[in-house]
Image (cartoon, rainbow, N blue to C red):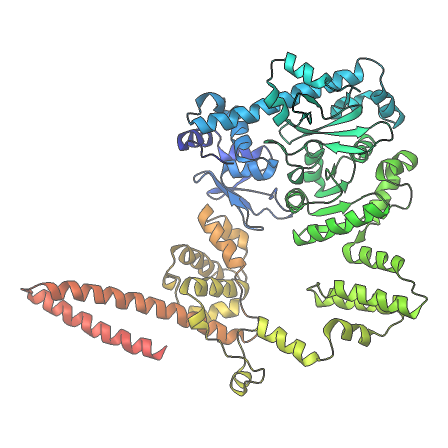
Length: 613
């Protein structure tokens, strides 16, 4: 952001925007204990785990871990920067941040962004009037592409005249200064530094609008056969194409409902699909998806469908986008267009249902890469088969699921007529024992007595008590007993819920102990409804605690000992501090001498207990 806003202004806006009211605009909330609960807007879920605290004015999702205040909620949900989120919330509360901001830097930043928004708005209106007020090349082109006036108006499409300074002169007459028009990215400076000329000329104009309805930039498509075919606004204080998606402002509600988003390459692809009734579609403002765009897509939808053009450039862009989406954690599939060069052409020739059928038959990431590799290599030759298998095994090495790997190994074996054993060797190498050894070193913290002392795998045994602090031990133990009543019965014999030293852990333990008195299993919903927002966050951490899958009995005992040891150590420290205070007194009373003796006896007892642990 580059500036720091006055805390009083931020607090005032937050106080005037109750988080329950704001979140309720997007999420159906129900009262649940001392909080409110609904389906998380940041990930797909069937059981509500999105908690909003009226008291703390904070939200936390027990499922995905997203959390924050009302400003961060708007930033994440509407893809806004801090200033725009603050401005929007201010508008809802009747607070004009432009008027009450006191910092000079605040005012400069706000004015700069507001000025560009206004320039863009006037430019968009200018382009729109050029398009619709009389016949022109732009309108003829859009009609030829099958658009109607209703769609043109919906997207605010426009036309940049075939002149050098038409827009610039219009904006200057509106009262804007030349430097601001230049910073908005609408004009370019002449080489001789003797003036400016319009960036967009003789092009159909596509306004890029953010989720709050502000024009942040433009895309222009050439009408005649000239290069470049598409031209976008440069980066400005309000626009970065790597952080935005075309038509997300129109698609967001449909996307949230369907939890699926279709990503296409071009503006016309979006508009053509939208006009046919397919509204969960956006364009990536370029051929390659960025990491920020992938994170934005993940925020809105569980599944991303890539439907780029079927040409070679489109395939290359698809592969880059697939890898970025996978890294962002998106579920992703690829439409392999069988009819038409691009989505817009397909939907206009074959109709909406034809495109939806393509979406239904979309390929997974791995299947898409296998298909491309088959097309690149001749599987009727030995050389082609070898290249095919080698290319796919490199992909399979990146997979984490053994089941998924096994499925594709069998599929590749059928496709290439190469044995399963040979493909496995290509993936894992010849020394299978080395692979097993590596897996054990990386993942197993608790070993059997035999393995530990024979040093069979040439590793050093780990001591859980040294590795795990008491808070982590408490949370790991809570996870084990929440999932297993047998474990709870064993723990209950040695620990009561008061023995959990962390206050939140102790409250959760008390609820767990109480629920097991009347039930054979724990329903997390029953716990969630009795926790405040901070405790919900702690329960989320407990849920995600890493506990061993092997030698669980030993781990259970280690966790108990860690908790017991911490309690004793804390008591020991308390006694030491009290003894120091009493020893400093010169004229000790009889009561104080008796107290010292009692503390010394307790101290010796604690030392013996510590020695046993």
